[in-house]
Amino acid sequence: MEQINEGVRSARRGRQWTQIHEAAVALVLEKGLAATTIDAVAAAAGVSRRSFFNYFPTKEDAVLGTRDPWLPEADWEDFVSSSLAVLPRTAKLLAAVLNTSTQAGEGFRRRREMVRAFPELRRRTHVHVQAAEQLVSTALIERLKPHQAALLAHELPNDPGAQHALVLLAGTITRYAFTEDPEEFARDWQSAVIRASAIFGALLHPVSR
Image 1 (cartoon, rainbow, N blue to C red):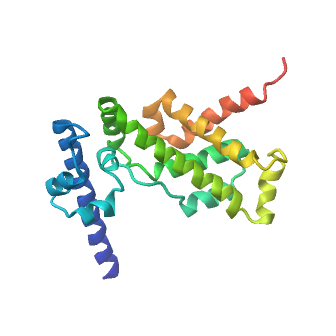
Image 2: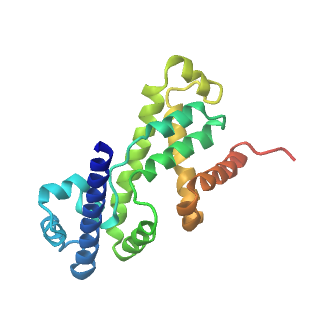
C-alpha cells in the first residue's frame, strides 16, 4: 500500500512540475521574461506561490525546467570505486551532478531554444554549473577518507589547490563534450565525457614522436 501511495504522490509531483514548467514557458513566450512573474506562473499553472517554490527555486528555473544540482550517492560511490584515471573520473562525476539539475528527454531541446530566444537565461545555467563544481570540489576535499585519498594522491600534485584545479579542468572537459555535440551529450553523456577526457589527456600528456 505504501508503494502505491508513493507512486501516486510521485505521479502528482510529476504533473505539477510539468504544469508549472509549461505555464512558465507559455507566459515567457507571450509576455517576455521580464514581464513574467512567479505569481503569474503559479496562477496559470493552478498552484500556489508556495507550491511553485517546492518545484523551482527561481522563475528562470521554471522556464528552463531546471533545479539546484545535488550529488547522488550512487555516482559518488562510482567515483570512489572507478578504475578510470582521475581526470575522466572527475569529469564523469561532475557531469552526473550537472544532470541532476535538468529534466531529461525533450526538455534538453526546449532549454536550448529558450536560451537562444532569451540569452539572459544563460546566467541561470552558469549558476548551476558553478554550484555543481562547488559540490564536487567540496566532496573531493571533505568526503574522501584518509585511506581513500590515496586513490588520488599518486595522480595529483602535492599542492593544496590541486583538487580545485582538477574540478575546473573537469568542468572544461564537460563543457567541451557538450558544445561539440549537444545531441550526443543528451543521448549518452558518459561516453561523450570519456571521449572528451581522452582528447584533453592527449593534450596534457603528449606522446613524443
